[in-house]
Amino acid sequence: MGKIIAFANQKGGVGKTTTCLNVSAYMAIMGKKVLLIDIDPQGNATSGLGQEKSNEHNSIYQVISKDCEVDEAVIKTNVDNLDLLPANIDLAGVEVELVYKQNREKIFKEILDKIKNSYDYITIDCPPSLGLITVNALTAADSVCIPMQCEFFSLEGLSQLMNTIRLIKKRGLNPDLQIEGVVLTMRDTRSNLGKQVAEEINKFFGNAVFKTNIPRNVRLAESPSYGMPVYLYDKSCSGAQAYLKLTEEILNKNNDKFNKINTKGKRV
Image 1 (spheres, rainbow, N blue to C red):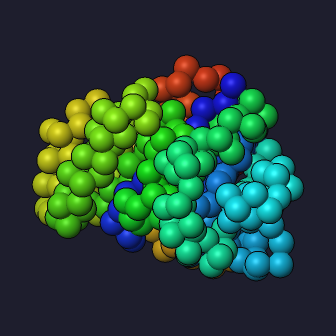
Image 2 (cartoon, one colour):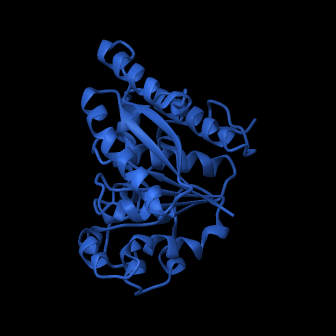
Image 3 (cartoon, rainbow, N blue to C red):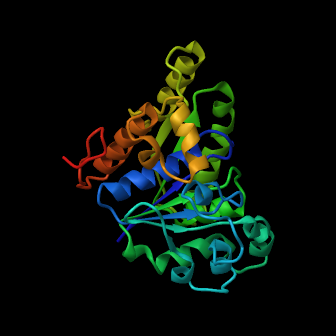
């Protein structure tokens, strides 16, 4: 049975989609069968994997609306073993529609229960909000991965996210939801503020903070505009190396064996 990891943070611009996309790609490259579900109406994970954000083909919206089955909306990507359930702008109004549905917080869970056994990992790129879409993702997930930028304002929104996670567990929507880990992104080791924020996050989360930090990196920032994960764009850059190490850390944490690859992207 596959593990479902939601990548969530209601603050935008913290590297959430970049982290979800690149971890998913590296998992697939390491031999895992992975499905990335884009539930952000902006569809950045969809375009970041080279897919058109078009309403001409099925998306997660059609699956939620029951206009198609989930396997009719899943598409292959340019990475072997990595499938995508895309999003487009149609998703923008889905929260209004969910309000009137029974068991509205469990719509995604019902969808994912049908395909969970078909993948080793299902990753969910959540929107930058704590609305019904994100609540659905956290209700369906086994764990949540929290990317956090090393800046002061990232700390301010952290309590809201943690409170949402507590409520989801307390109200019985997903009592077993775990923190997969916290990823420090856009890290500038020369910045005193970055060091202070990292220290505060480590105090709060302790061992839940991943040892691997993601640096600021131009090649990493460029790769989505070319519709590919950083592994395909420039596997030798510092951003690619960081996501390789982070993915290894996640798989090791789950006691999951994987095909190791070296810094040149080849199996060892």
